[in-house]
Image (cartoon, rainbow, N blue to C red; front, side, top):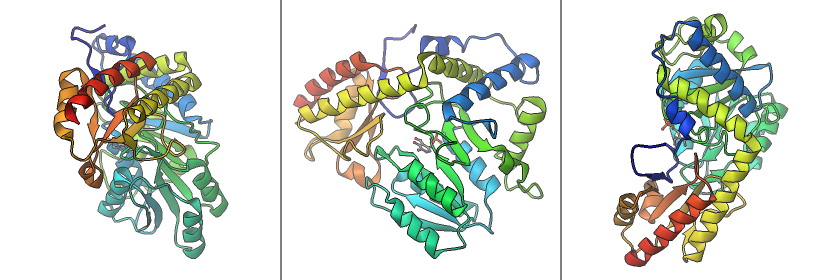
Length: 367
Ligand SMILES: Cc1ncc(COP(=O)(O)O)c(C=O)c1O
């Protein structure tokens, strides 16, 4: 269902959405303070709880905004000057968490790795042993900028063992990777609507332990809008949001969550895994190298190098003109001619093969 010729989004968000998600955009005009919309919020929260693996100790809060809105709401509402966050930084999105903590003046001890390198949980354990001031751990699950999957379960065991709060930015992981807030001892887990949940951009999502919300400081919040406490209060008392939400995007998300659960979370993750495998085998068959080994790579993003002499910007533009969007790498990885092929959203194996055929022909012209 589209009035436009099909354009394939092989970028890590926004993603292609299913027809039923697009159709959800044409809904009856509705106010956000009525029972019908409260039901949209409740259905979405209930579905998302299953996708996060959450039990009754958790709730899911929705905020109009992007993934960063979910991250900033959580970090700025929960942590303060008396905390010290042990932060993992091995890519662009670890870096962004560092910036958020810095802006909100939350002390941090940062464990850094070169972009593309895996995290060693022993390093974090050593920091926890050395530094009794640490109160929390923060880490990105899927470091989208490099395709690396960080060891969420192992670090969760450390959080449990040392009694620390655990924040996981799973913006590009929920719905695409094996993640379970209960099993992984996660206290706060963030996500956005427009990656592996396969909806449209505009809703930030926070899965969080109720006990923490009950004890949040309320005296002087740092933010009026990005405020976890008021989001929680409105959700609990009214099944609403404190401010006007993007009604249409909430309705689209409800449809996307239903679609995902109809496909089945495991089935969707398997589909992503199969697609990533096809893409990786395909680019290697073209003689291209990937940034990270398959053992630490995500199910949804392949980071691949074009030969140094090839014009990456022109290559990406050519693919775009042929109906396929891919993503340039960031920072030092862009300098090395890296780009990213994502297989999030409504993409299947045939789409991946179609893309690879076009990419192979395009590559011949650029190398
Ligand atoms: C892991 C991760 N965290 C945070 C973000 C920021 O999300 P947004 O651009 O939706 O604010 C992204 C975006 O790609 C991401 O991949």
